[in-house]
Length: 438
Image 1 (cartoon, rainbow, N blue to C red):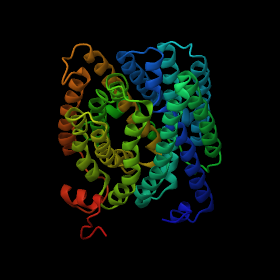
Image 2 (image 1 turned 60 degrees about the vertical axis):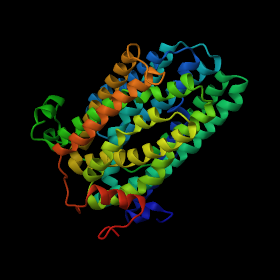
Image 3 (image 1 turned 90 degrees about the vertical axis):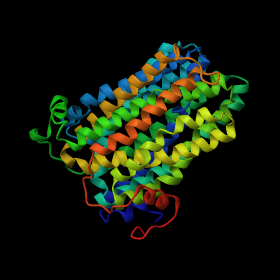
Image 4 (image 1 turned 45 degrees about the horizontal axis):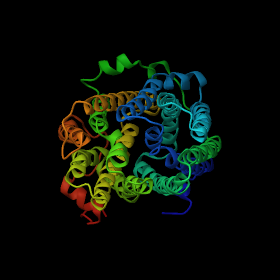
């Protein structure tokens, strides 16, 4: 791949400049993610938060992110600019990191006050996503989306891994003296990175987009077309999948830090292993999806996601969990990339902002309900191998596998693609070239 990646996707100078700016936005946004995404829960545990409050943290973040999606498309129409939309709310998201930094520095914040800040942080970020996704889908050609977003996500993911490891190192070193100060450094750094990301977003070019009344439809109209709409069925499939995932997902940090007593550095290493694997595999999945379609990749990876919690039940040794995370990253790389790209294929540009918003709404609600139910169940589940969280993992695994196998059967690919078996998909991704996919 060329160093100047934008040249490979467009000869239009405005588009090339926008893709460059988008790359740098992604680089700095990933730095922010590395300092925050995996460290809100450890900080909540530090200030006295319980496992149930961890579930509430995750639930309210997803609830805020989902409910804001209801107004995202309408605000974009009101502003008549996707660029204005995501620039404004990205700036607000950066601003929220300042009180988080001060709260950590003086360590005076209550668990529910911090949860509220985290919910605002997630909500502002979510408001920006549909408009940004719509604009980016206009800049990248249809037949290059898999390879482009695969390449972009690979680089930004590597940055997230590097910064998350740095954050773990800071917590281990500075945290040995003052853990509150260590978290303040993390949140303050995230603020600086997000401001840099916002600056590059302001440098992007926005292609003209007409807003017609026929392209504006309510959520009730969207649901009314469930029986005949392939996209609506896809949204519900991913939502049910995320519900089953989030029964367990918020409690992996609790298991590692509270129950297994892992250090912050070991926690960071195990956590970022999945992200690193995503970075290494996502380009392969993207190139393959351009040829065989996003739905085929989803059909292959969805059942694999159900296996992930079982691996954490089988063995608790850090070395084994490292390989479990490699498996996790392999599956999630294909699923997440192709779930996003399927939306770009399935809807017209004029409806994309609203469809992305509804997609995020249902998935945010599903994630919220999953984490809330998971937190409630923890107080009543019997222990498995000494830990009730592992019982929750087993329930999550069974639901994931059922939805992963059955859900894709009700969906259809929306563009002309090559047809290969699931076994050939696996072989192609791991490096065994198949005839016709060279």
